[in-house]
Image 1 (spheres, rainbow, N blue to C red):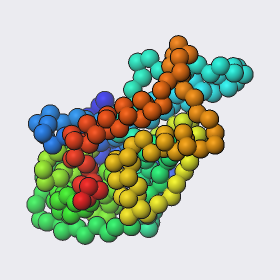
Image 2 (cartoon, rainbow, N blue to C red):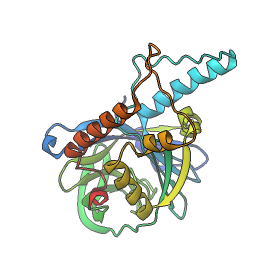
Image 3 (cartoon, rainbow, N blue to C red):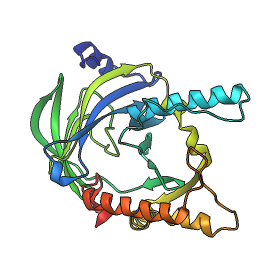
Length: 288
């Protein structure tokens, strides 16, 4: 991927809401605080237009696009035995996305838990402290600002020459695009790496799997409760299906029927092991 050039910066400065603009960030992170010296990374897209923005994983976007094409191909051929080839495909590590509307900057966080799809409105305000320090971030002349959000202390570097009061994840509200964002522990950071013009909106690549999920709208406090319930009881949805009037039967690739009770125990054990390691969440206050 090409490094941000001065030409692209100038294009960003003369930003036009008549076109879609994409800002590409590298997100470095670890959910396991014991591995803070070996951070994972994922490319993230911030797509901006006159109505608002969407922030999401490039890897998941590519995965959803390919999956959509395969499903459509099977549907068009009237193939009743849908075959999905997922060899070599990866969903990435980031499944959530964040949308913001302009000019009110209403935030909706989207994520899947179990069989459900959650749309979470987040009305928490960000109080910024803008400081006089300047720093070169790539080819951007950036200024420093700090805030506390979702249980973490953050340092932002924003570019006043790009008049977009937006940034990665839920961050927004500075007089210029946020080009770098890092938390105090140095275990979560976002850095702008490239800019693209005239992009195709990502909504066209929404995962076809979401059409089978129940969509639930919550506020942040309700989501936190649901998140903790799912974390502590990851097999709840499976038990609900087993207890319903509908008979649930699952088989492996050879047609052998699977023991649902054993699957529940295995899922609970896997999640318990994950919980012990993954305590360094992006929103630390979800566990507080």
